[in-house]
Length: 342
Image 1 (cartoon, rainbow, N blue to C red):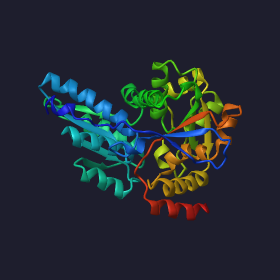
Image 2: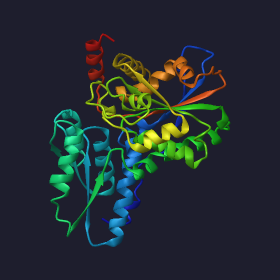
Image 3: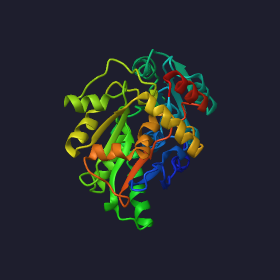
Image 4: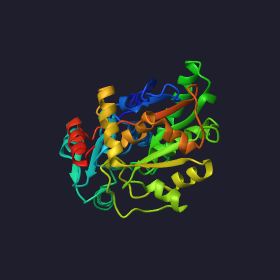
């Protein structure tokens, strides 16, 4: 591993595009930030790539050890780590729970990473990674880079770059940022949300532009936490939107939401699946439910107005993070829709 190799670009600048999702001509304008165009097909490339690149450069500068990346995720986070490592020429091991789809396991392996299947869910896989693999590693020659899928300020810093790009895109298109009335994002453990808040704070926009965080019932950790006015840990995940599957949100997520008055919405699985199929047909991107929960608000601007407690006009703008993901196939969506009667 050389510093020259570590200068390879590992994320893409993604477009901010107006989409006509609602049939209401008086609805606010909907702009989508297309994170599905990242190398791993999800926003995870930004934060996880930033962690890996930052720490790999530190290790390379010391010059006496080999960097080895370790990730615990059976979904988009693990794949993002594998994609980043393939571009940077780094070794990567991903521990996934037994619930991980064989398709995702194969995708991670195909790009050159080691996959270890262990644990009934993400938390057990993560514990096994830290206590049985990283802890027993020969650290005389190898320096581990542990990548948490969402609870790391470096992850948030990486995700925050999408706000920089949003600000630049609006400026380049001569669109007054004061027209932006909300940013909508999906939330699982809080990594994406924390990144957006970090970026808004950097641009001094956190008090001006509210963030609407969207989940599904059964994976609604943030919704339950805001409702209880304290961080809540769920007993488990029962939603089909498995990419939202964290039983807790970070402390920073709760604190950001309380300080800046972020709004929290929980949709049903049926609503998420219907929007997954509708947007997949529109965009030709297979859109998993975790992404579709945010896109749903583009089709239903009345939900945005209710969350903000105000009437919006056709001159107002709502930005939705099309966060991407590649854990579902279109056939998966069809099967799930049939099971849910959607």
